[in-house]
Image (cartoon, rainbow, N blue to C red; front, top):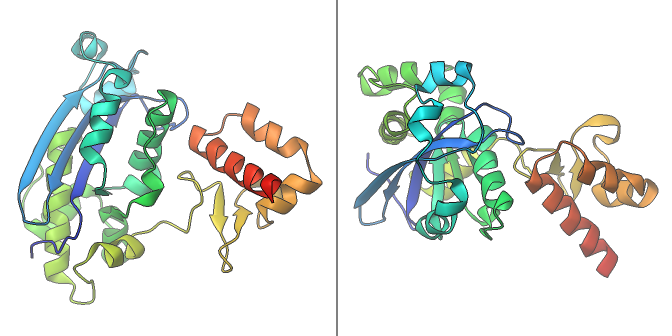
Length: 255
């Protein structure tokens, strides 16, 4: 089944130096942009992460320091990449938990202003796990009856994810072929920030989602514990988490 789109939908995958969205960096990004008229555009770009690539990461994606030493840095391509995905919804495999938060961090580090929170996100892994409980290679075999050649390469994973989503739409009649439904169905919680340190409650109020203040309103915590904001800002938290708690603090201050 072909996708029913109102906006372009960008399937993307990142290969990185590791899995810590605060510390790790992108070494390769691949994307496949599907337009509402069905036309496609794909690109693969290797990136110099400006830090050593650990051997355990190279063992997964096959990219080492020598491969990227002459590649552009993320700062060099950030504005161009932001322009290419502006106005697009985003899709990936485990993207809500990892790829989108890490991509947002990279943009924030280089001061490129792109508000990804305005977009719809489709996480094909979440749909898969809700329906079948498998991995990406198994998902490709299950839905498409094909073996995934080049697994853990960004381009192969990106294209496989696109094919899987189309096959999922064919297989499950209860999954609607529109981005709003798919985004809601594949959402991982109702996050305020990409890392899910804060979430919205049933009244659409921001609450803390970890630690001693879990379940309490962010605005109330900031009032009763003035040092909490400083602890977040100085701590090992994602830049997007810091940005969102700052916006809440400023909003309440201006009231």
